[in-house]
Length: 210
Image (cartoon, rainbow, N blue to C red):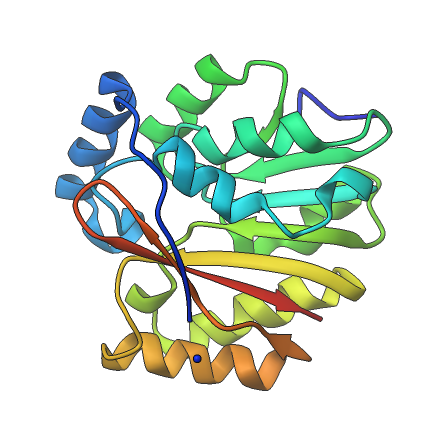
């Protein structure tokens, strides 16, 4: 059951009014810890939907979310999950973890580092993940940490499992290009990036298959 203690593609969708508390919390956390948060506002609804679409979570048995922040993408994931699916999230920020629990009080949240994904899967009784959705700031991490987290994550993903991640920089930015090259090495398939209009800039969404 769902655990609730639990060439580029161009897409343009009309924005909706942001949730003020989540936006202010993100801005505050970004100012205090820019290398940990990597974004100054939570994902708007149309970006959250784009992060989840095409991952097959509607048929998943186990799904994990990395860096959910205040939980806007979590909302989109939960809308799609079948009743027998296990879902959990991992958030490192103290303040965002607190706000996430207020927004999704019945969803399992591990307030810790995603590097411990194997341990958290074991605690949830999950042998293999069908999908991973992540908003963590990959390009702000050292390359060695990026690779370690991807290796730990892939070890818990079944063959054919799906992965999505987001950045607010294009591949013209060197650090994005380097991370894209790492994904190309680690995943069997990395789809062309989807470009989605966000509030103040474009969001670049990658979907990969193990």
